[in-house]
Length: 205
Image 1: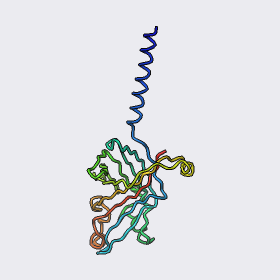
Image 2: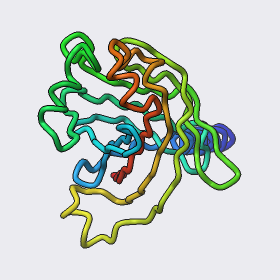
Image 3: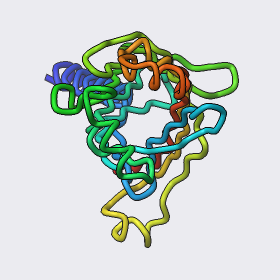
Image 4: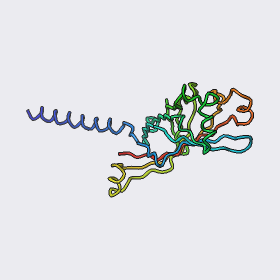
């Protein structure tokens, strides 16, 4: 009987250890703080950079600092929320000349792989879809900082226990997605390369 009890105890301990290892190997979900997150872009008008941003966005972020390959990011941006600081220009961007918002309301990115870099950053690779056209892109991501949230502040921050900040940037050719290619004015006056930057603060509960 004692031998059976010892075997049972050993089995339970092994199961608990295995379960703990499995739990620790799962990537951690992080929630974006919209008040401290921005999705921005810049493109030249003749020679002058014009900047803008999207006021609305949703993101699902899995971040595993111990095993970056298990991390993932998924972003959905309502295109109608575009804001360049000029309402006439923003209305034009929503038309079929540019984003054709009524037919293609969202810009999306979903990583299919994430790898670590020698500098300590990450590169997320996956399809970026704009105006119904999907292109594979690589999104370099820098970790700006990560730290625990002091216990007295956790309740004020909705139970968050840790904070991390990220900066992601890339450049795309808008012509690859059929954005603004229907007139000479769009192709001659506005630059083809669009720089994209995401500054994100995320919390872990």
